[in-house]
Length: 169
Image (tube, rainbow, N blue to C red):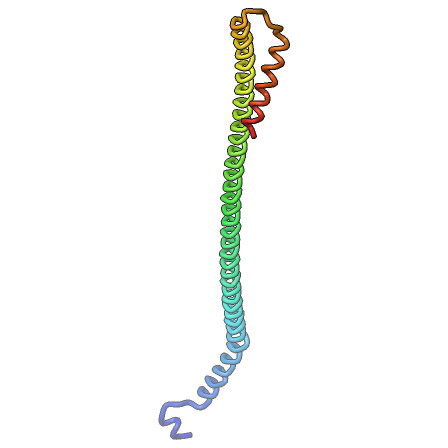
């Protein structure tokens, strides 16, 4: 102890200081260190929770982006289908219009042929009548007598009919 005194260390004061330091360390441990550690642990937990939420938000954003891309792809496919259907419908309408125009043209051509036949038949009948009248008139002048018009007309009609039948066969 004397050696300690030579060094300038007072033992009772040293013991009091060690006891005071121990008490201060105990009090700081109880009142400061534990609350500070609790706050640090709480902050660490909040940071960890925040990081987890950030990861969840990133995952949700990625899923939403994938779903968005998927929906855009589906919409694009549906749009293509709509376009294809519209083109197909347009082609069908165009084809139907062409067919209707052909049918109408054929019907008009058929009507025109029928009208031409009717007009030709009427002209032929009229020519027969005129020919018959001219023949009767000529025969009457040649014979210089009046012939029975009805009898000669019947004779000429039968000759013309037989000549027409011969020409058709």
